[in-house]
Image (tube, rainbow over all chains, first blue to last red; front, side, top):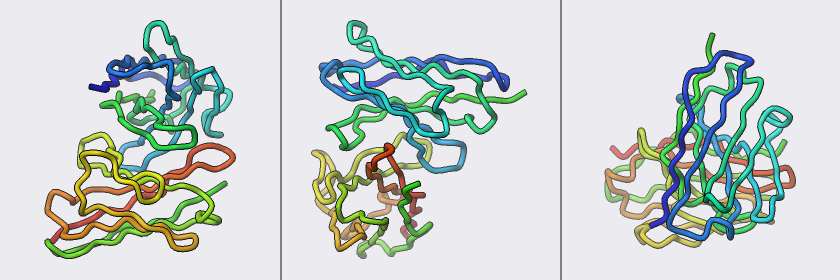
Length: 118
Length: 106
């Protein structure tokens, strides 16, 4: 079955960096757009970034210039390099498959918590 | 920036019909998806392209659109349907989620 497993979250100080990873299985990873979506504690969902199957990339304004999404199709893996982290980046980060271009998000990983605090 | 507006909360009695709305500028020209999030769980897709139900989602979930408002309807609501629901659409700058609606079954 389709599975997405995130890792790399943790506690980090403001201004520091963190790299999230997502291991995909159960589908042909290279055929799909992939995305990162986050949820701050007690808040709603916020789209972060997505990457196309051929490398097209888009970011939310809130992370543009600080976060970098990438993928390794040979390793069936998605990444999110987060630099210059801020308190407001504290959230659970979900790795999500995009069902179609400009389409739906399904399935979602279990999420990894990133806490930015001094 | 583009915004999707949902009511913060909706209450329904068991067995009754719950309707959750999502509105936005020119939403009639976009496809909308809906996600259900149970407490402590990851979101689950329950509707895509306005009114298509993914496999495994009960038939009591349905979607519709009228003008710039999209509605998720749950017929014969069950206690297990109590959750947060989010609508989502794409615009020229990326992906937008509604603020979420807490559905209470009481």
